[in-house]
Image (cartoon, rainbow, N blue to C red; front, side, top):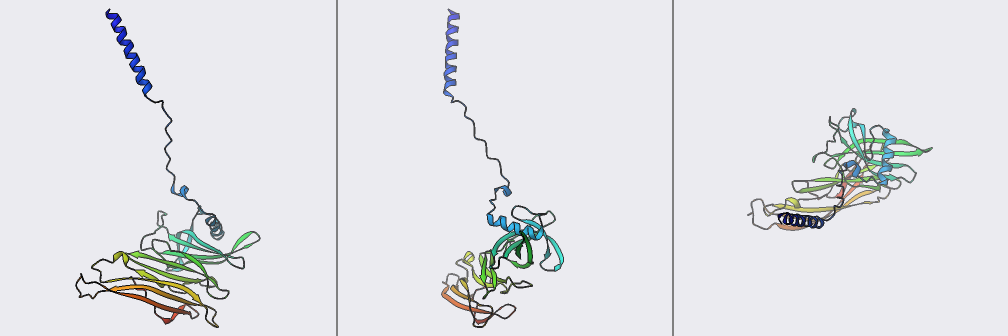
Length: 293
């Protein structure tokens, strides 16, 4: 009797165990976790970047070339060709000229002893420009302008815009600037592709600025001024004039006024006309009303 009871209990236990096992769903293959991908592999290099890198390799060779930048020995911006250093050179923009030549603008960042780019908030980008022509299926370098201007912040500069400086005078503009302690400023630099010792013809004209990020109730002076740039022909002149038209506002409260007193709001409009004098653009009419930061 006792043996019969034991057998019954054992059978029940086996039945319960089998049921319990059936309640557990069959194992399903777990998805394989995504493997970390290196930052370089994540980049999707555009067709334009591929072509620009081809042009830069025609200038500097394949040594030190990567997918979207290369390491090159360039002249020091301050000391010119009297000193050189190692730089990360990255293509920014390219433009095909009417005669078949191609212009390329690139940004350089100096490398430290560990080979890392020195790009900080207060560090400008270093602008270089090149003109190449394809001859017999091979690119030849017609002009090389290395580290000719410090523009921008955080080691980079902004938008490159290809423009005509006058009849048959191709060039380009660079918008650049930055933000410091809530105040932002934007400049424009202008370059002539035919300029032998290429330099900024505009000497970083002020284009816009504001302090919206720092304008609190206790701030006595707040502003936002924006300029629009266009080239306007001058009769008999080889170079067009550069004309800036400004809109925006300024708000002021006297330094001795109570902090809770409202600032006086004033709409601001203005115009500044610059003429090329053979070396650079100089102000000949109006006023650049963009406040400095």
